[in-house]
Amino acid sequence: MTGLQRESIDFGGLEIAFDERVLRPRTWTENQSWWAAELLPDLPPGDVLELCSGAGQIGLLAVAGTDRRLVCVDLNPAAAELTTANAAAAGRADLVEVREGRISDVLAPGERFPMMIADPPWVRRADTQRFPEDPLLAIDGGDDGLTVVRECLTAIATHLAEGGVALLQLGPGDQAEQVSRLLAGTPLVPGESRAYGDRGVLLRIDR
Image 1 (spheres, rainbow, N blue to C red):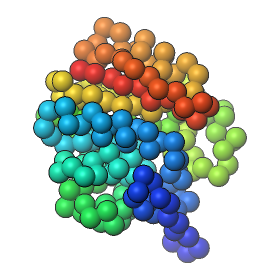
Image 2 (tube, rainbow, N blue to C red):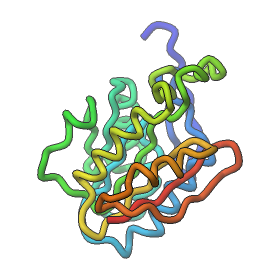
Image 3 (tube, one colour):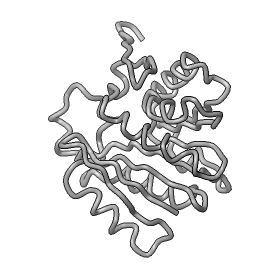
């Protein structure tokens, strides 16, 4: 792409490449990776799935130092391109599978994952104009901010293995409470949430 400038950032010790077509990696989201890495040794065997993966940095850092395979899913072709490059740079080209497309289209019915990491856009559509430097596709969460979150919850309900854990990134405010209400009566159990000021919230979901 003419005029496209690729940058890189240190993300938990990984050199992550990105450009203006994806969301710039936020340092605070390393916490999602570290939490996942802390949980992985006690989870059943199997691949780690990252939904709405962007440049792939959160999933790549989560599995660093393990032999777990990582499956990254994103609708944005640029995200798929950058995740592939970042996996190779991290020496994990053979351990990372990148799938471009809608979540429901690229996951097979029988696939199960002991760890799922989801980083969906959660900004309300009316508020996206406040972040002109961010790609709209990466931040637009629909009218209530939860449109893509709901898609992730459907995928978690379908693909999280028994005894597995999902870590879901949400916006500040009451989104974690809203998600907990959405999970009522399902096999998914909302657990600990960790807030990072006005930057976002991480919610643990168990099966």
